[in-house]
Amino acid sequence: MKVVLDMDPGIDDAMALLLTLNNSRLEILAVTTVSGNVNVDKATLNALKIIEAAGGRCGQAPVYRGAGRPLNKRRHPVYSEDIHGRNGLGNVDPSPRLRAKEEKTSAVDKLVELLSSHKKKEISIVATGPLTNIAMLLQREPSAAKKLNQLYIMGGIYDNGLTKGNVTKHAEFNFFCDPEAAKIVIDNAERKGLSIIASGLDITSTSACAIRNDELGMICSIRSKIADIACKILQYPLRNYSFFNLHDVFALFSLLYPEIFRTQRCRVRVYTSGRHRGKCVVSYGNGNVQVNRQVNSVRFNKYLLDGLA
Image 1 (cartoon, helix red, strand yellow):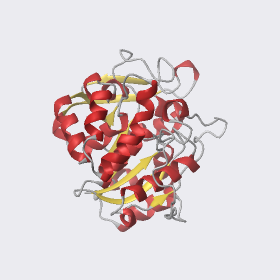
Image 2 (spheres, rainbow, N blue to C red):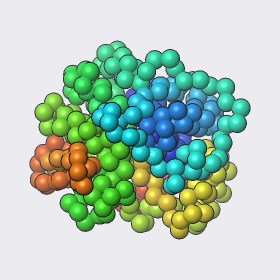
Image 3 (cartoon, one colour):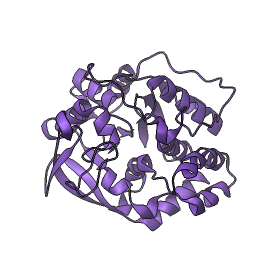
C-alpha cells in the first residue's frame, strides 16, 4: 500500500510513524509536516530524527516541510508542548547526530507531484495533524479529491457533544488549530467525492486503548529498535499523567486493520469561528464522512505491540 503520512510529531504522531516504518505492507512515499503539536520546524526535525533512529528504511521515507501557519493568516499557531514536551518528543532526542535532511520540495508541491505521477486511487494519506497541507492541496489541485484512494484523518469529535474537547469543550486540537482547513477537507468529501475515514476524539480517547505504566512496561520489554524509541518518548507523558492516548495511531490502524472498527457514515459540518470554533455537527445515516464509532481494544493493543516488535 502506497501511503503519505501528513503529521506534526508529537508523541502519538511519532508512534504512528514508528509503526509505519516497521510495517512491510506500507510503502512510504513521503512524510509531510505541518504546524500543530509543535511548530513546523520542530515537526520536520522530529520526523527526520525518528526515521533516522529507526534505521533501515530511512531512504524510503523522505520528509517534506509543510505549512507553518493556519490557512487564515490572522490566526496564531496553537501548540501542545505542555503535553508533548519542549521538543515534541517528550524531551528525548532519538538521533543526536542527525545526518538526514529534509527535501527541498515543499509538502504541497510533493503531494501534487505524487498524485500526478501515480495511478488514480493508488495513494492514501494518513493525516494526524491539522489539515492545512491537505486543504492547500485540494485548493490548488481540486482533482486530488478523486485521485486519492482514501484520506484517513485523526481529528474532530463525532458524537454531538457527548465527548468533551481537549482544547475547548467543543473542539478537538487538530480541528481547533485550523478550522478553515478542516472545513475545506470535510466539504470536499461532499462536493468533490473525497473519501474520508475519520477517527475523532470520541473514539481515540477509548480508555482500554490508552498507554499506562503496565503497557509501557510491555513496550519497553520488547527490545527492538523501534520499541526502544517508543519506550523512551512515552515515559514523558506518563510521568505527568496517569495515562496517554495514542490518538494518531487510530488513523493509521484504520488503514491497516479496518476490521477492528465499527464505522458509520455521517454528514459533518465544521464551525470555523466563535466559541464553537473547530466543533463538528454530525447527522448519522448517510453523508460525506465514514466515522469510526467503536474499536476492538483487545486487537488494537495486540497490533500495537506486534507492530513495535
